[in-house]
Length: 143
Image (tube, rainbow, N blue to C red; front, side, top):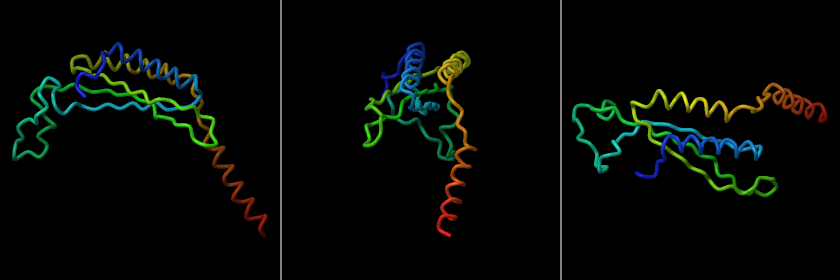
């Protein structure tokens, strides 16, 4: 997977497009994940020397490691009886160096907030009341 990550600016542009695509469709999800790289990207991929006495040897590296941030949409395939269109899965990722984390997260929060604006809040109370009415109505009809 090395070499497949895009620049941070390109990542933000594509993430904005991904949010807009889902907003236009009227449904869909955007999955955002992040994690610390376990092996520095400039190495050949071989595992670093383990310390025999330390089972958590990889939790305190000598130098700070970059963070990988990923975003994707859940591939939506056409299912019988639904009006969903067949959509290709979009996967994007970027590496964020430790010294750029603060600036990255400020911009990341702005893009995510903008992408989530206009979402409708789910009314869970209404759904729970409807379920209770259905259960209660069925019991009365039988008796």
